[in-house]
Image 1 (cartoon, rainbow, N blue to C red):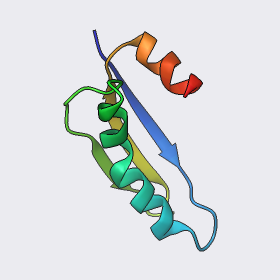
Image 2 (cartoon, helix red, strand yellow):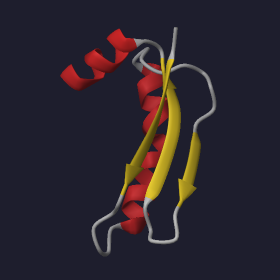
Image 3 (cartoon, rainbow, N blue to C red):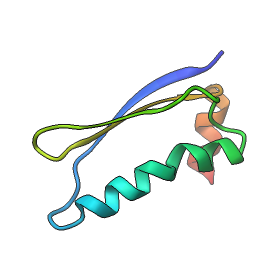
Length: 69
């Protein structure tokens, strides 16, 4: 069973675009490694610049594998 997660990331000053670009390709990399499901991620931006990403890991084991990669 997959695990849906919500991640909030606040960029350092001047790095807002860099963070948005990084997040835009994040789930696809996880999919290529067999760690994330095909569920479409949701990427949001809060008023203070915080980027919020919602996606689904394939399993708890996938989360652990990602932290070892």
